[in-house]
Length: 352
Image (cartoon, rainbow, N blue to C red; front, top):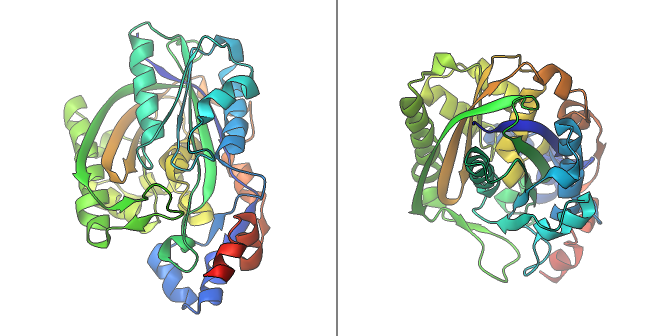
């Protein structure tokens, strides 16, 4: 028995701030910033939004597409690095918020931006082993970026949820295989008690992001005996727009296979939701038989490469909940001061 996706759901905040507005406040050249990140806008969580509220909305939409009762979910796993409580999981809150059973496996996981994909693979393995019938996996982050620092231009908020199943009658995309590649590469971290993460600048690009994503993608293709021309779409983790497009080129994928999964240019880097939101965007346009390569990345560092094959259930599924493409258009632009208020940073900036 193989596992696959029965349904997916997305949630992105309606409030957005443009990188041009951020550059104006800090006296940066907006054209230089645009060229550096290739990000036009990013999402900003409302004052009463966090990783929990966004996870609930995304999960409800995923369950609607899966067409299963919440009572049929056997596990709920959440990947996040920005949960609102230092000690209290998001997963347990989802049990009651969604009406799940109490005899479920529930846990939060942390591996920077790839924990949600780790939970997807573990859930798939448990389904294939016959331990679970259906599993819910959520990636949700209201990511931290220090005002005036370079993450201020990219760190954003959003959530994505997937219901995995072994029931082929409910499956809209089958997991064909996966490959993981990890190492101790200190490119990004946040110490306990620190409000903002920091970068090991010399490690951020080549030895961290590119090394791990490329190794994972190549490892999976070798394992499955596939080549770039066997895939219809490719989706990579998106800290900015430049990195995933460069990876596609290095791996030999035409840019037109990577562009449909790019969301960072319009919503910023949503961390655990980043690549998986890109996958959701592709599922909204993919045809039965399409093969999709998804490669996530988490600082610290590691990548998961996943190959999926779309089934003939996809056309029906995509109409059962709000689409990401529609959510992208529903936006309210705010200025920098409102951005600070929503993120509860106005006092911090004044005191600094």
